[in-house]
Amino acid sequence: MQEPELATATKGRPMRRAALALGVLALSGCSLEFGSDRGATRQGRDIFGLWQGSVLVALIVGGLVWGLIVYAIFRYRRRNDDLPTQSQYLIKLELFYTVVPIVIVAILFGFAYRTQDEVDALSPDPDLVIEVRGFQWQWQFQYRGEDVTVTGAPERLPVMVLPVHQTARVILTSRDVIHSFYVPAFNEKRDLIPGVRNKIDLDPIEIGTYVGRCAEFCGLDHARMDFTVKVVSEADYRAWLADRRGDSP
Image 1 (cartoon, rainbow, N blue to C red):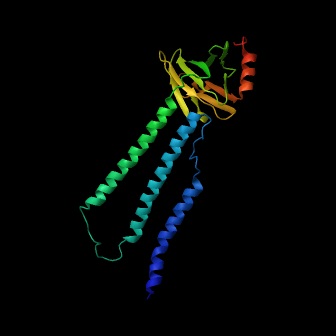
Image 2: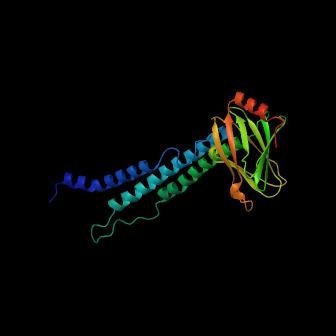
Image 3: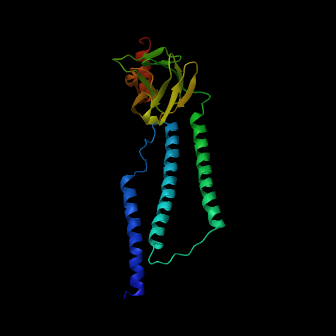
């Protein structure tokens, strides 16, 4: 016959092992980025922060639920033919697990609304304005007031150059069908709709070269409708403008 202390320790081992296994599994498969880019623009960082917070909340809630399931499995498993104590109409408990999810969803909604409002906000005085026109199946970038236009071709991807730490107003229009302006590293995309002028602001915070794509199926050569975004210093941006000015195909 087992001693009481030994029996208690033995009963607790499966729960500790299960908790340890779940913890190791979670830590080995996740990073704090949770599969998303951190964002190379201020707007992208805001979206990443919302994503990161939402996933952390989901992991906490999921860990709590799984912990309660594992606890119930080992604590209330059937040991004989006797039925366990039966309870019903636990009003306080029912109110608790009804109200808590509503509160969590309301808080997440509030953060999502605030983030969307910040990302969609337009500066009253942007540093530069770029007219982005999508057409089957390429892009055109016209720098307003700079006499610079970059037009893509099947054998030549267009390049959008942006100065770091400056606000770029991007005006999106389409000549034919719906396209979608998407730079994965910016954590944001926006549609180009015929007859509609969508506007977004981009505030680059990291110098680098980023891939851009059309994220809306727009015809046979949709897969070739790519572009490049280069974020450079202000001096390099001015030098690029001077080099391209008057030499835009």
